[in-house]
Image (tube, rainbow, N blue to C red; front, side, top):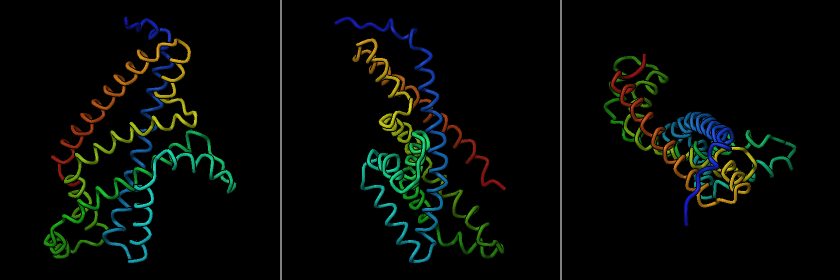
Length: 221
């Protein structure tokens, strides 16, 4: 069997558009999911018993159900309650909710590894609760688990492929569209797999390099 990639230039605009949508979904979903994860981790470690149980229910519910089911519930289920969202908004919300649960657990591990002496040092320096959380707990915790967080960001990018199921025109949706037109499914998905590989490598390297420089500068003032 001879491979034929001569179709690529004819669909380059669609491919670039799909890549940009994938990147947009990853950035928005990953960043908002990270913020949700920070709140989730703080609640698990320092929240009231009621808050901790609520967060445990959220985390376990998300981690023990498929992302596709969560996505379909938001896109098809919420309209039954009178809440209608666009396909892309539904995809982003599903990604944020899913990412928040996983990143929350990663960050919780980093927070629980904070030595007790650090809290005593913060108290002796007359730091308030917010200052202690920001400088003593959060920043060092992120530094401890940064490689795991980077891995989660990459997984988020892969999760965006599932959002094609509700007709969001990201990279996997574009691949399905192209192979339905050129009838070269093998070459199309090989090309898209290679594209995901390049995107994942670039995202991982950029985040690791950014983390190296940020953590080398120390805790932000």
